[in-house]
Amino acid sequence: MKSKTRYAILGILKTLGPKSGYALKKTMAESTAYFWSESFGSLYPTLAQLEKEGAIEPREKGARRSVIYSITAKGSVELEKWLFLPAEESRPRSEMLLKLFFSTERPKEVTCEQLRAFRARAQEQVQLFKQMAEQLRKSSSGDSLKYWLMTVRLGQLQSEVNFQWCNECLEELR
Amino acid sequence: MKSKTRYAILGILKTLGPKSGYALKKTMAESTAYFWSESFGSLYPTLAQLEKEGAIEPREKGARRSVIYSITAKGSVELEKWLFLPAEESRPRSEMLLKLFFSTERPKEVTCEQLRAFRARAQEQVQLFKQMAEQLRKSSSGDSLKYWLMTVRLGQLQSEVNFQWCNECLEELR
DNA sequence: TCCGTCATGTAAATGGTTACATGATTCG
DNA sequence: CGAATCATGTAACCATTTACATGACGGA
Figure 1 (cartoon, rainbow over the protein chains, first blue to last red):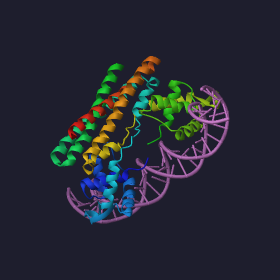
Figure 2 (tube, protein in one colour):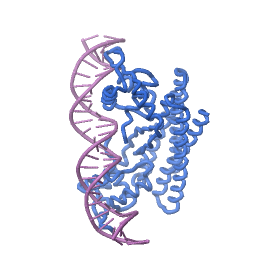
Figure 3 (cartoon, helix red, strand yellow):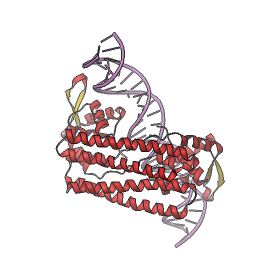
Figure 4 (tube, protein in one colour):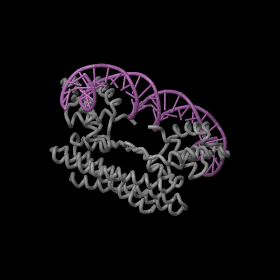
């Protein structure tokens, strides 16, 4: 499974304009965290690599000695090529479900407690996604907005079914 | 993030009885694959480790020279301890959503095509989960069934929202 | 002056998959 | 006999996180 860190970087530089490594991290944390995030430990080495390859270039020196990168023509081509390729499926792991699967080996009350914790998180996330959508509609415009709202929408829908599912389960365990 | 391979093994040996490494893999592929799976490359070394620690022991020699492990008292204690601990959240990555986020950089038709592919997968999965639930209700019984059905149910619900979400998106892009 | 944030980077450890090697057994 | 499956194992590789080191800058 090849690393996609480079495409996450290229994509943000392309759609959101030049950014420093630090700003990239912040942007991801605020907008793509639900389905994609990167640590500094993978961000900075990848930035260096991309610069070496000529896919990005250090543009201006920003405030506080930050290095602002922008995407090059070569980088744009690589990004677009990737965007045409079908997306690989991910195999997510859920420790919560793994534990639920083995729940005969623990008291019912422990299972319920963990379900309630999961439900609480889901509920918070629903609110968070609603706020994100509102925020986006206010502050953004243009062609991107439509796609960004779609990603947020899926997050919200999934959080909502998680919440409902927890209620179902807790009902059944009562 | 500590490895949970050991608990997946211990849990299956406990709830489904003694198994070989090969059988463990097969069992996971058939029952937990949607939220948990392991490769041989992590399975066998972990089995060796667990045996060294006395959490499992080779019981009988099965057919075809397979080594059948069963969980020990010590292993049971470790499993239970883990089951009491709250589950860690996972940070899943979705290449599909990452690409969708950058969809201004590709033709609308490419985005639609990938959404349709995603929808087709979701639809298949819904059917698969329905079959799994049916199968489980027929072949299983006891306390475990209830929990297994819960995990399957979440899979189905999530696949269903994925499907609906795709339709929404495709509608909007028409 | 000192704290918090901005900012870049690296080293070590971790965790995991993939690909390969090996060979037994069963079935057609 | 030959193919498919059962079965175990390892080595190389890859990706990623964590923890740490370093220091500039702005404001209270």
